[in-house]
Figure 1 (cartoon, helix red, strand yellow):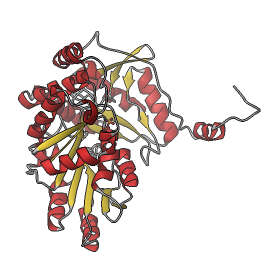
Figure 2 (cartoon, helix red, strand yellow; figure 1 turned 30 degrees about the vertical axis):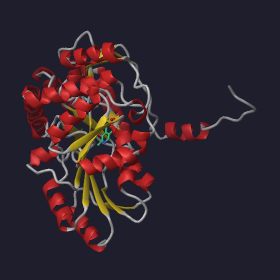
Figure 3 (cartoon, helix red, strand yellow; figure 1 turned 135 degrees about the vertical axis):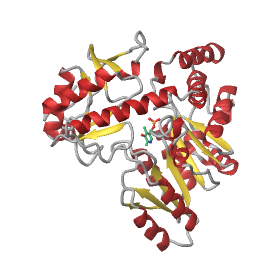
Figure 4 (cartoon, rainbow, N blue to C red; figure 1 turned 180 degrees about the vertical axis):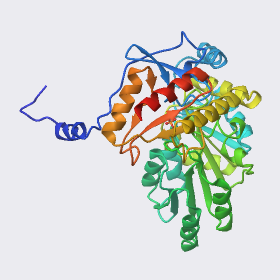
Length: 390
Ligand SMILES: *Cc1c(COP(=O)(O)O)cnc(C)c1O
C-alpha cells in the first residue's frame, strides 16, 4: 500500500534491479522421497534439476541415520530449545555432541552454537576487544567480517593467502594481543589457506589463530577437517570453529578449543548467552553425522573421486579450475549478464549452478559444488552443457 506517496526503499530496490543484482528466493520442493542421491538433485519451481550448488557434500542431510537420530530426539525432547542453555540447561545430546567434536578436532573441549553466522559474529567479539589487533584474510566469510566489526578491535586485512604480508603485519604489532583469522577453505574460490605457514607465523609471534572450517569439516583430512589434512597438532592458542550445516547435513556450529577458552566463550559469547539453545533433534542429527564420519570414510572417498573426475573433465574442455583445490569449483564465464544467461541456459538444460555476483564476490562466476551423490553421467552432462556455452 502506498501511504501519501512514501515508498520506503523503493529507490534502493530500483537501483539493485537496474544493475541486475536483485536476489530472489525460488520455491523448492523437498526431495525426501528420493533420498538416494538427494545431495545431487533439487526440485526448484517444480523442475527436477541436477544440483551443483549444495553444501551437503556427503548427502547427509537426507541420510536415514541422521533422520532416525533426529526423530528419536524429537520424541524424547520435543521441538523447541526452550531457553538459552545457561537458563534451561543443556540436554545429553548437546553434551555428547560437544564431546564428539572435541574428539574429532583433538581439543580439550568444544561448544555448540546456533549457526556459523552466530558463532563468528559473537565469538570474535568475545575473543578480541578494543586495543587488540585482528589480522583477517581479504576473502574471509561475511560473518567473520561482521564479527570483526562488532569486536571494536583494530582489524587489518592481509592479502588473500599471503603469509609474507601476514608476517609483516604481525611484526609491526608486537606487544598487543593479536588474533589471526582465516577461512580454511574459501567458500567462493574453493582454495585452501596455507595453514602450516600461518601456524608457524602465529607461533613465532605469539598470536592466537582462529580458523573457520565450515567447508573443511567432513571434506578435508578424511572428514576430520583442515588441521588434520595438514597434520597440524591442535595447540591451546588455536581456536577451531566450523559448522554442522554443510557437509554434516544438519544445522548449527561448533567451536573447539582449550577448556579455558571454551569457559571464557560460555561466559562472554553473546550469541551463546542471549539466544535459545539448538533444539535436540537438530543436535542429535549433528551428533549422528559426526559419529558417522568418524568411523566411515566411504562417502568422503566418493566425494573426492567425483571431485577429481569433474576437474579432469573440465580441464579436457579447456576450463581452468585454478585456484580450486576442493569440491567448490568456480567457473568464470564473463560479465554479470553473460553469467546470468549461462546459469539460465544450464537451468533450462536441467542443471542448477547459480550465478554468484557482486557483492558476494568481486567478479561474477558460476559456483559449482560437487557432491558424493553425483553420478558420472551427471558430471558429464554438466561438462557437455558448459562446453556448448563456450
Ligand atoms: C556458511 C558459512 C558460515 C555460516 O554458517 P551458517 O551455519 O550457515 O550460518 C560461516 N563461515 C563460512 C566460511 C561459511 O561458508
